[in-house]
Length: 288
Length: 343
Image (cartoon, rainbow over all chains, first blue to last red; front, top):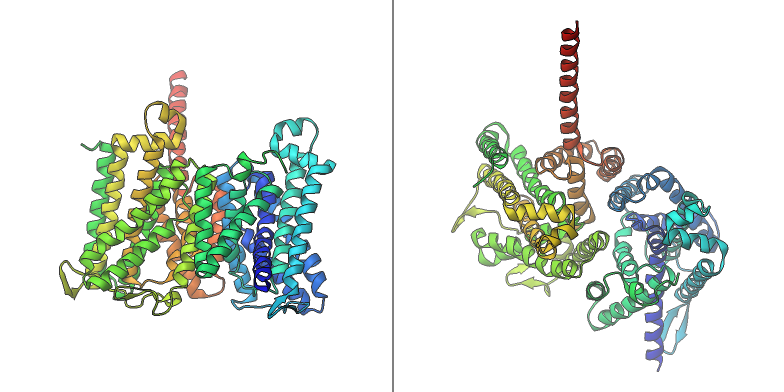
């Protein structure tokens, strides 16, 4: 019984982790059709922002939930204005440019922060579940992720801003001719996506250490989740994070974490063979 | 029968290759020669990407997967057979088979560019993780231990065919690598001159139109992809013989640099990426020696800069500039003639 509850919690936590690292990427890809290959480095910088802010005596929750998203969001705005803006509609070039950005950020982080692991300790401690000890902090992340996804859905579905964003996403020319400032929508979306990646980095900093090269560990899974999810930002990544996490965690239980990652990838490739436009390309079409 | 536009570049490549193989070992010290061998093996890697992206229109972010699989296959087969003669086919066939399986899923699933790029990148990253996790006795293939993070320091050197007791000298190793580069170049040129090669370019230009003309775009893309993987595997093997095999062959940096060479050298040319590869390698070796900034910073800036400023690549830009200057010169001359006639 306890083991069952523990397993359930672990599956939920792994879904939350995958959903968290994918959300920023999903917002940028779903809304702008831009694949941001510097996503992993945005996460990395979010992690560093939390570590440094905490080191300077800032409360850890403020560091994670406020400073990391603000810092990386600001960087996202600069990147959008300097690079991405010139490349709209040139998908391949955007990927290449953001990959260049990714290398640049890794190189700069290595030069200035050094190639060593930094970290902060997880707040809140743990509670006992029968004979097992479970971390409170991971449950807090689970709740935060649920709130984030709910807020994202509500924002896109029920607000005026969400309506404009979805209109721009579906028919950019038509939305523009109806008076929606397309460039502003894109700039805002990219900034929000970057801020969400920063938030993910901040929240993950206590769980995994922060190193300049940490982005690579998350970026592969995040991409797979987002493209398996398909066009819908919230619903798509939510479903695919759940599906892929269950496969990944299952394989991890049967073998080891590396096999878990391989199984996750294999499941995604087979899924994309069956549904080439992602899960929400066929089912739940049109939901944000 | 080759067309002239194919024949002369091939003759030139063979000539340059012969000259390099004969002259460089005479002039250079052993250290420089080994570096030149590594650069040449990487140039083959650049060539594989130039073929599949520049001509096939397949933007593979995970060419490093095939490069790395070639290197690992060579090391494993070489250690088990004790003779590099039999390891060579393994280094070409293993990546080609892997590409065939992966390519079946993505091309026959008709995944578009972006999905394809992301999947190939993910495959590479997972292979990187997998290769890093193979430390210990449990991970051995026959005699060969995969060695996890440390790789396989016992990667065997190339030897004379069927004579494991005779490893190649550095000069011979260099000549073999140059020969492989020239052979791959001629192969690519020849493929592109055949009707099949024309179909490859047709599919790149317009997939639907090519299909309406009766070409199976899926099959054509799959085969180009497999050929590219085989060439990348060969380059990985040659790289492994001059360095040794470690998981870094699958790293993000290795996957990125081949794209950078092609972007900088020019998409749609074979020579451009080869030249860019040598140039950027030399540059990053120089920066590494100074040790002031991380080479990744330079690579990143070069990639962003060339996408924003020279999206066609340097070689086509230079050629374009040359043709334009020639045209301007001709226009000026004919204008001058007209003026003299008028007077």
